[in-house]
Length: 336
Ligand code: 5GP
Ligand code: MN
Image (cartoon, rainbow, N blue to C red; front, side, top):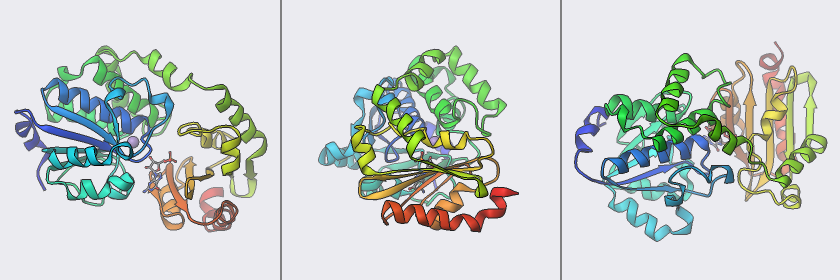
């Protein structure tokens, strides 16, 4: 495997570069991709960000968003860019299944694939690995990559700083999660000094509710939340009809699962939602409960200890029943 420190030399002359990230990109996925985009552009490269699917509306303001290509909107053009790329940066994912239909194009590409990621158990498709599962966000690693490995802290422009701040803020739940170390706060201080307007970023992400989204939240809290005190577990179960009734789009359900987790004493929260072909599950936990293990063993998924996801091909009702039925396996972890 090529070493990350050899990249600095390789990036001296202008190259064709593609940056990609996971399906349904979140704030960290898109923030770290656009940060790298701005930095590489600033060094004279030809750069395109290609994402496998659309992304939440509250990320639409990110600087450079207008240059992002959505793979499914132009497969032929995207495949050509991927085939012609000298470098392909793969951010915030470490298995080709996380980029859905883009998987074969990236898997077969001749360019050097550089993975920058913080998820557990990398699959190994990449040529260069810049990976740290203890990092709070991929944006933290991109910061370290630019300022440290590439030795270019002054290359962090206000645009780069804004995108990195967004990635770190969203992946740490606004600097709340356990992963929020002193080092994170030092990086954040540096990003603010370099031009990230922190209050505006919070405003864009968290105060951008639409009326229907807020009313949908009220509906879910009142009618779709079940609490299982015996297992310190709470979950939402949401049907396709519910989504249609409120005109719910990508991103509208982001953060919903955290309301279930915020109930006093709850250790495990789930969002079980009928979306697209399959049932999508999101898990969040407090403390040592391994959401990634539960997701991997029962719902074809994975993720982090305290935040993971997966899917099921059964009906919504069957999936909810399966979830309830596996809780006794974890009784000790949930109640000790
Ligand atoms: P979310 O619940 O926000 O969709 O996902 C939370 C985290 O779980 C993501 O950051 C990602 O690491 C992981 N995750 C979500 N869905 C999947 C999945 O289908 N497969 C895997 N391996 N990880 C997932
Ligand atoms: Mn991330």
